[in-house]
Length: 241
Image: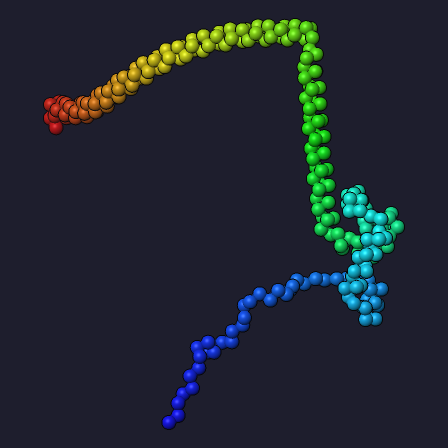
């Protein structure tokens, strides 16, 4: 009989890769070579020797420090002007700057902070001087100025007193006007009551007049009837009709 071949569990499923540290530098570095360096690389020279030689040449020939470079940059000079001022080519300055990029950034930051501190100190000093000047001006007020201020204060107090008296007089006048207004209001109420009473009286007289008119009309009609009856009676008695 056939038998199934047993497989170790370690050999089953996906392929496993090792996780031990390999110690290999995986950092990616980029370099920009000059035409001369490219020619040397084409001729078979080692890349490390080319870079090492360029570094040594830069260190030997360039008379330029990081502080000088940063100071020139802060003055507004570009790389072409700096290279011309130091008697260098643009490529030499570029190579020199590439090897000192971190130091240049640190120096620029330090110089900017120093300039800011100096500017802040100058502003503080100017503010202190202005404060001292203001204090001196305040202390230079003489007795004449104080006397003038006293006279102005007395004059202002006098004007204030006059205004207060004027306000009191106007307040009295206002109180009198309000009292008179109250009296007139009461009189208006009395007159309104009298007018209402007179209206009622007029209405009563009107109603009485209407009743008298009706009575007069009835009396006149009865009088005409009596006159006609008397005339008819007289004719009958006289003429026998």
